[in-house]
Image (tube, rainbow, N blue to C red; front, side, top):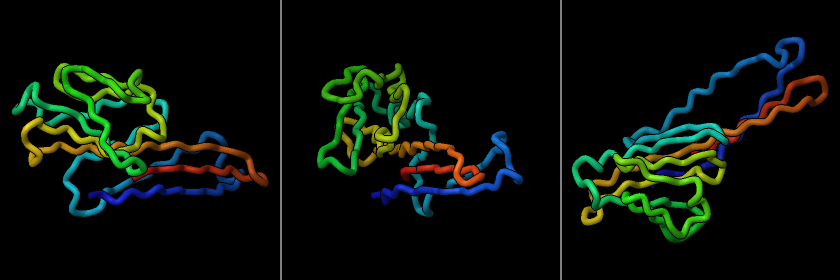
Length: 150
């Protein structure tokens, strides 16, 4: 099981060094030993999570969404039936069983598992990480806060 951590990066940049047009590059690396897919998206963007086991198992596949704060998995079938979800209006399943999430939020950062119905050993796991940032002027410096849930 992957460790879940909320990382916060805070940068103070003097106005004389950088104006509002500064760009930053963050390189995020998953811990060694994890071969599952990790996706990074900004809050508000749309994301497509691939189901790599679909080609072999076709219609007997479902998505499980693990939320660390909840004891149960949220389940979505690949026939496009999204039920019992507080975010159902933003979820859909494509013809190849990829999970589409529109207008992602910080709360969408989760472990998503595409699982064949009769085989728990061929899971395709995707970790969705959300990035959000805010800028504010603090004592003639630019304050940038970047939150990443991994």
